[in-house]
Length: 321
Image 1 (cartoon, rainbow, N blue to C red):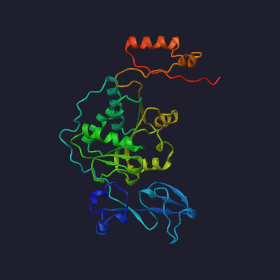
Image 2: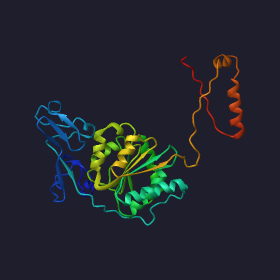
Image 3: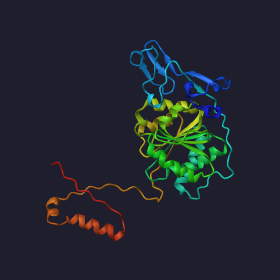
Image 4: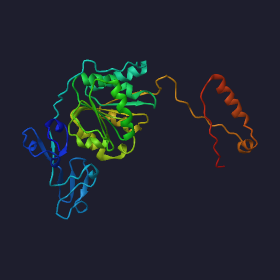
């Protein structure tokens, strides 16, 4: 049961979870949890629309079946919030990470900060291993300095759990919270939130800076309700940074069309290009293997890679013809 107004700042919480004494606070704002239309209902928490006949309870109340795993909300409830106040204590040393970005990483990091400062969204398109998390450190530092409230969200629990300790180490003087369905950590008001995209449904016009990792990954990429949650969790004048190793052309065009920016880094942090897969035809390789022999072309390539100290991997694929 929520008893402190601070725990409602920027949140979207059913009134049944708020202490009855707090509900009389004049700073609280109330929104209908579920709106009933002529033939359908609309959920204000997740944005889901449902036919009335499919979500009516025996007592005549309508509920949202889409976000029921987060706790049922229905037409008898209100969603409660307190406007975000950005009431944060800024630590004297914000970024405690002592690493260094490469020239390419610094260029992308600089472009991200410029986008945010000019109130533009940004897509960071960088290959796996390019150091996308580290490239966010400068903009996170800037946002913290300016008392912005920040969320880093991912569709996957494992990504959130992996990001959390890395960010704790990089910003060791900053309080932050990790939120997902399997997390044992309780919500608390703090400047930086790491969460799954589903958890964004519990926020309302909260974040000045919202970072979505793996923006093209399941389930986020095809889920209109999660995109609704992102729109509602971000402040009206807030910015979104999207991270992806493989953004489709539609996403890139959409960002540009909506006056956003795109930065591209095709190199990993060590500066080497990703290996290009090459196909070589070798006849009767299966028969040679049964005789404990290797195809000559394979021997030649192995010797070459060993000589130059390169890691390598070969796959034998059976032809369909």
